[in-house]
Length: 135
Image (cartoon, rainbow, N blue to C red; front, side):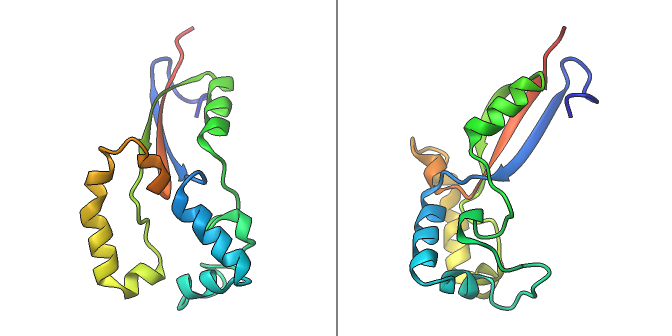
């Protein structure tokens, strides 16, 4: 991104947020139940779209890095982080496809979370807006 952006150009990155309470609680439950939580969450998916994962990799990603690491990478590449934004509390998945009421309730509550100080604790993903530094 840094190579192809013009000076003053913007890039927006979305990535899982490993520093969220939902993921941490899910990880602890999954570890205690030897993967039962992931099997329930991903029920109905095939092994290609939802491969068996180690608990520390997150509920649906191979690798997940916190904002501090992303900020460091981006700044080393010459991109200034302008803003970190919270993604939705629910980011889809077969469990929510089967439970319309739960997903609807969480979607309805989502805008309220933007007003909370600890809003990133309940967000499964985040967005990072950055700008290429002018030389």
